[in-house]
Image 1 (cartoon, rainbow, N blue to C red):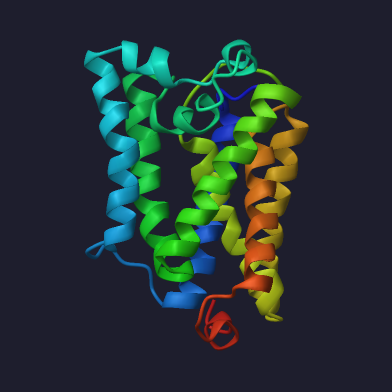
Image 2 (cartoon, rainbow, N blue to C red):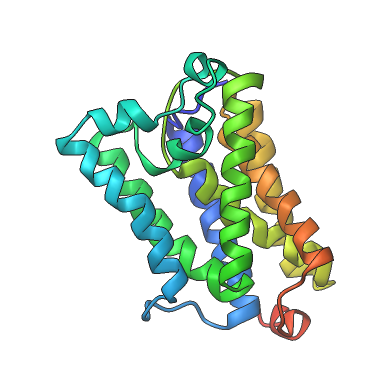
Length: 219
Protein backbone atom coordinates (compact mmCIF):
# COMPACT_ATOMS: atom_id res chain seq x y z
CA UNK A 1 0.00 0.00 0.00
CA UNK A 2 1.47 3.33 -1.10
CA UNK A 3 1.66 6.63 0.76
CA UNK A 4 2.66 8.72 -2.26
CA UNK A 5 -0.89 9.82 -3.07
CA UNK A 6 -0.10 10.07 -6.76
CA UNK A 7 -2.58 9.73 -9.61
CA UNK A 8 -5.85 11.38 -10.59
CA UNK A 9 -7.98 8.97 -8.59
CA UNK A 10 -6.26 9.83 -5.33
CA UNK A 11 -6.29 13.55 -6.14
CA UNK A 12 -10.02 13.57 -6.85
CA UNK A 13 -10.79 11.63 -3.67
CA UNK A 14 -8.56 13.95 -1.62
CA UNK A 15 -10.44 16.97 -2.95
CA UNK A 16 -13.77 15.26 -2.27
CA UNK A 17 -12.82 14.72 1.38
CA UNK A 18 -11.77 18.35 1.75
CA UNK A 19 -14.90 19.75 0.08
CA UNK A 20 -17.27 17.58 2.12
CA UNK A 21 -15.37 18.36 5.33
CA UNK A 22 -15.73 22.08 4.58
CA UNK A 23 -19.47 21.63 4.09
CA UNK A 24 -19.72 19.75 7.37
CA UNK A 25 -17.67 22.42 9.10
CA UNK A 26 -20.18 24.99 7.96
CA UNK A 27 -22.89 23.11 9.88
CA UNK A 28 -21.05 24.03 13.08
CA UNK A 29 -19.59 27.47 12.46
CA UNK A 30 -21.67 28.87 9.62
CA UNK A 31 -20.16 29.97 6.32
CA UNK A 32 -16.45 29.12 6.11
CA UNK A 33 -14.51 32.28 5.22
CA UNK A 34 -10.89 33.31 4.81
CA UNK A 35 -10.60 35.23 8.08
CA UNK A 36 -7.86 35.49 10.68
CA UNK A 37 -7.15 31.90 11.77
CA UNK A 38 -7.28 30.80 15.42
CA UNK A 39 -3.96 30.98 17.26
CA UNK A 40 -3.86 27.22 17.82
CA UNK A 41 -4.21 26.61 14.09
CA UNK A 42 -1.39 29.05 13.36
CA UNK A 43 0.93 27.37 15.87
CA UNK A 44 0.10 23.91 14.50
CA UNK A 45 0.78 25.11 10.96
CA UNK A 46 4.11 26.67 11.93
CA UNK A 47 5.23 23.49 13.69
CA UNK A 48 4.80 21.67 10.39
CA UNK A 49 5.82 24.45 8.01
CA UNK A 50 9.14 25.52 9.57
CA UNK A 51 10.95 22.14 9.37
CA UNK A 52 9.21 21.36 6.05
CA UNK A 53 10.62 24.53 4.49
CA UNK A 54 13.96 24.19 6.28
CA UNK A 55 14.54 20.80 4.70
CA UNK A 56 14.60 22.44 1.26
CA UNK A 57 17.94 24.05 2.11
CA UNK A 58 19.03 21.47 4.69
CA UNK A 59 18.12 17.98 3.39
CA UNK A 60 19.56 16.45 6.56
CA UNK A 61 16.39 17.57 8.34
CA UNK A 62 14.36 15.16 6.20
CA UNK A 63 16.85 12.36 6.81
CA UNK A 64 16.64 12.88 10.58
CA UNK A 65 12.84 13.07 10.86
CA UNK A 66 11.30 10.99 8.05
CA UNK A 67 9.49 7.71 8.59
CA UNK A 68 11.88 4.81 8.01
CA UNK A 69 10.47 1.44 9.08
CA UNK A 70 13.93 -0.06 9.42
CA UNK A 71 15.18 2.66 11.72
CA UNK A 72 11.90 2.72 13.64
CA UNK A 73 12.36 -0.95 14.40
CA UNK A 74 15.86 0.00 15.53
CA UNK A 75 14.28 2.02 18.38
CA UNK A 76 14.01 5.37 16.59
CA UNK A 77 10.35 5.61 17.57
CA UNK A 78 10.20 9.38 17.27
CA UNK A 79 10.09 9.07 13.49
CA UNK A 80 6.46 7.91 13.71
CA UNK A 81 5.56 11.41 14.92
CA UNK A 82 8.33 13.62 13.49
CA UNK A 83 7.70 12.42 9.93
CA UNK A 84 4.62 14.66 9.91
CA UNK A 85 6.85 17.76 10.08
CA UNK A 86 8.86 17.08 6.91
CA UNK A 87 7.81 16.33 3.34
CA UNK A 88 8.91 13.75 0.78
CA UNK A 89 7.06 15.21 -2.22
CA UNK A 90 9.56 17.84 -3.25
CA UNK A 91 8.79 21.55 -3.36
CA UNK A 92 5.43 21.09 -5.10
CA UNK A 93 4.30 18.46 -2.62
CA UNK A 94 5.44 20.60 0.29
CA UNK A 95 3.49 23.62 -0.95
CA UNK A 96 0.32 21.60 -1.52
CA UNK A 97 0.49 19.90 1.88
CA UNK A 98 1.04 23.19 3.70
CA UNK A 99 -1.77 24.93 1.81
CA UNK A 100 -4.20 22.14 2.61
CA UNK A 101 -3.20 22.21 6.27
CA UNK A 102 -3.66 25.99 6.26
CA UNK A 103 -7.29 25.39 5.25
CA UNK A 104 -8.10 22.35 7.38
CA UNK A 105 -6.44 23.38 10.67
CA UNK A 106 -8.45 26.61 11.21
CA UNK A 107 -11.66 24.82 10.24
CA UNK A 108 -11.02 21.96 12.66
CA UNK A 109 -9.97 24.29 15.50
CA UNK A 110 -13.14 26.37 15.09
CA UNK A 111 -15.31 23.25 15.10
CA UNK A 112 -13.57 21.14 17.73
CA UNK A 113 -11.75 23.74 19.79
CA UNK A 114 -7.98 23.98 19.99
CA UNK A 115 -7.21 21.13 22.38
CA UNK A 116 -9.48 18.62 20.67
CA UNK A 117 -8.20 19.51 17.19
CA UNK A 118 -4.56 19.10 18.23
CA UNK A 119 -5.38 15.82 19.96
CA UNK A 120 -7.05 14.52 16.80
CA UNK A 121 -4.12 15.61 14.62
CA UNK A 122 -1.48 14.00 16.85
CA UNK A 123 -3.47 10.81 17.44
CA UNK A 124 -4.15 10.45 13.71
CA UNK A 125 -0.46 10.87 12.91
CA UNK A 126 0.57 8.26 15.47
CA UNK A 127 -1.95 5.73 14.15
CA UNK A 128 -1.10 6.49 10.51
CA UNK A 129 2.61 6.25 11.34
CA UNK A 130 2.13 2.88 13.00
CA UNK A 131 0.14 1.60 10.00
CA UNK A 132 2.81 2.71 7.52
CA UNK A 133 5.72 1.59 9.66
CA UNK A 134 4.50 -1.88 10.59
CA UNK A 135 1.28 -2.95 8.86
CA UNK A 136 2.15 -1.61 5.40
CA UNK A 137 5.85 -0.69 5.78
CA UNK A 138 6.91 2.21 3.58
CA UNK A 139 9.43 5.01 4.07
CA UNK A 140 8.19 8.54 3.67
CA UNK A 141 7.16 11.80 5.27
CA UNK A 142 4.44 14.43 5.09
CA UNK A 143 1.42 15.79 6.89
CA UNK A 144 -1.15 14.70 4.30
CA UNK A 145 -2.30 11.66 6.30
CA UNK A 146 -2.85 13.58 9.54
CA UNK A 147 -4.46 16.49 7.69
CA UNK A 148 -6.93 14.25 5.86
CA UNK A 149 -7.72 12.48 9.12
CA UNK A 150 -8.38 15.81 10.82
CA UNK A 151 -10.73 16.78 8.00
CA UNK A 152 -12.48 13.40 8.14
CA UNK A 153 -12.99 13.71 11.89
CA UNK A 154 -15.87 16.07 11.10
CA UNK A 155 -17.68 13.15 9.51
CA UNK A 156 -17.45 11.20 12.75
CA UNK A 157 -18.71 14.21 14.70
CA UNK A 158 -21.73 14.67 12.45
CA UNK A 159 -22.65 10.98 12.48
CA UNK A 160 -22.74 11.01 16.27
CA UNK A 161 -24.61 14.29 16.69
CA UNK A 162 -26.84 14.91 13.67
CA UNK A 163 -29.86 13.22 12.15
CA UNK A 164 -30.09 15.62 9.19
CA UNK A 165 -29.90 13.55 6.00
CA UNK A 166 -27.78 15.99 3.98
CA UNK A 167 -25.14 16.20 6.68
CA UNK A 168 -25.17 12.43 7.08
CA UNK A 169 -24.85 12.01 3.31
CA UNK A 170 -21.80 14.26 3.27
CA UNK A 171 -20.31 12.25 6.14
CA UNK A 172 -20.99 9.05 4.23
CA UNK A 173 -19.24 10.55 1.21
CA UNK A 174 -16.08 11.09 3.26
CA UNK A 175 -16.16 7.52 4.55
CA UNK A 176 -16.76 6.21 1.02
CA UNK A 177 -13.79 8.22 -0.25
CA UNK A 178 -11.66 6.57 2.43
CA UNK A 179 -12.85 3.12 1.41
CA UNK A 180 -12.13 3.85 -2.27
CA UNK A 181 -8.64 5.08 -1.43
CA UNK A 182 -7.96 1.83 0.43
CA UNK A 183 -9.38 -0.13 -2.52
CA UNK A 184 -6.94 1.66 -4.85
CA UNK A 185 -4.05 0.72 -2.54
CA UNK A 186 -3.60 4.25 -1.20
CA UNK A 187 -2.76 4.31 2.51
CA UNK A 188 -4.34 7.75 2.85
CA UNK A 189 -7.65 5.90 2.89
CA UNK A 190 -6.62 4.45 6.25
CA UNK A 191 -6.00 8.00 7.47
CA UNK A 192 -9.46 9.12 6.35
CA UNK A 193 -11.18 6.18 8.03
CA UNK A 194 -9.07 6.62 11.16
CA UNK A 195 -10.02 10.29 11.34
CA UNK A 196 -13.73 9.51 11.02
CA UNK A 197 -13.53 6.91 13.79
CA UNK A 198 -11.54 9.20 16.08
CA UNK A 199 -14.02 12.00 15.43
CA UNK A 200 -16.91 9.75 16.37
CA UNK A 201 -15.13 8.59 19.52
CA UNK A 202 -14.23 12.12 20.62
CA UNK A 203 -17.75 13.36 19.88
CA UNK A 204 -19.00 10.66 22.24
CA UNK A 205 -16.67 11.28 25.19
CA UNK A 206 -15.98 15.02 24.80
CA UNK A 207 -18.29 16.68 22.26
CA UNK A 208 -17.60 20.29 21.28
CA UNK A 209 -20.26 22.86 22.11
CA UNK A 210 -22.62 24.13 19.44
CA UNK A 211 -25.96 23.56 17.77
CA UNK A 212 -24.99 21.05 15.10
CA UNK A 213 -28.53 19.93 14.36
CA UNK A 214 -29.77 23.46 13.78
CA UNK A 215 -26.97 24.36 11.36
CA UNK A 216 -27.13 21.00 9.58
CA UNK A 217 -30.51 21.94 8.19
CA UNK A 218 -28.83 24.75 6.26
CA UNK A 219 -26.31 22.46 4.54
